[in-house]
Amino acid sequence: MAMEVTMQEGSGLPLEDRILAMCAEYPKGIGDEFIQKKEPQIDSKERVAAINKLLTMGKIELLKGTSGLIYRLKCTTGASQIKGIDNQDKLVYQVIESAGNKGIWIRDIRHRCNLMLTEVNKILKNLENRKLIKAVKSVTASKKKVYMLFNLEPDSSITGGAWYSGQDFESEFVDVLNQQCYKFLQQKEESAASETAISPNARQAASYASSEEVLNFISNLGISKVKLSVEDIETILNTLIYDSKVEMMVVGTKDGTNKLYKAVHSLVEATDMTRAPCAVCPVFDQCRPGGVVSPEKCVYMSEWMEY
Image (tube, rainbow, N blue to C red; front, side, top):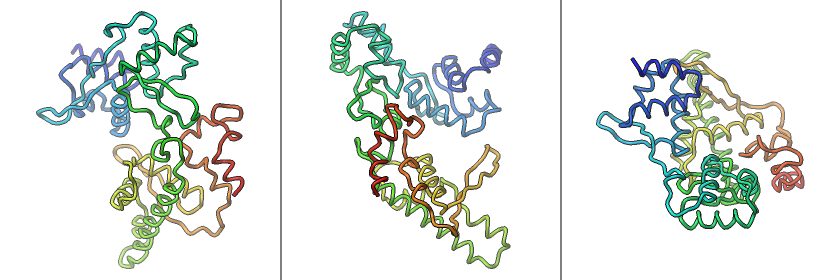
């Protein structure tokens, strides 16, 4: 009964915080069925997204229990538990910890800790040597580094995700994925069109494919050295939509909604504007004139303009 009251009172909190509260209530771990029972109004996609976010942030860990997979609060090393560092070191550590897997610039660390640059550099070096934090280069600014806890996996907005190798945008890799995704959807459409024994509506439905199906096709080809996600494939499919080669339809399911894609034969040639590098840029939402990420500083935009 106490658990029911707790969850009802915390229903205004984000789903991630509510899941953390469940894990705190049951230290031995909780499973998907438990979360679903406590949060029946949340569909599976939202639940999975919240759990993945907590796993990425290092707040929970995934374990194998007797009845299946369980989630448990991760034992993290708080600044107060670190031995051999002074209060200034702890302050810098806490500021970096609060930034999560997106990291924080040294300028922002200085501002929030109110320390001199020489002091911050000394503290950062000490924390790096003890493998408590790490510096990661960001694709948004190759000459700058962000700092995060040592055990965290950098967010895709920092690394550029599957489209970047170090600081370099893998344009050829994106082109190959673009071609193969379109080829798969073309084959799907042609196969459906050849089915004369079924109704026109059934042929139309059979010509669509989900992003999961496209991902499976690409994975089976073995053309990617990195593990691609559904979101990565949807980014590629979006570029095909911008090129007027593919159309998308959203359908309702028992778990929410699903995106379906179909190859189309455009009567109008795609313009160069729709082929702009912005279509697959992982930091597009951060791009603005005069900003750290901006059109005037973008080398890919410059190359595209020359082309």
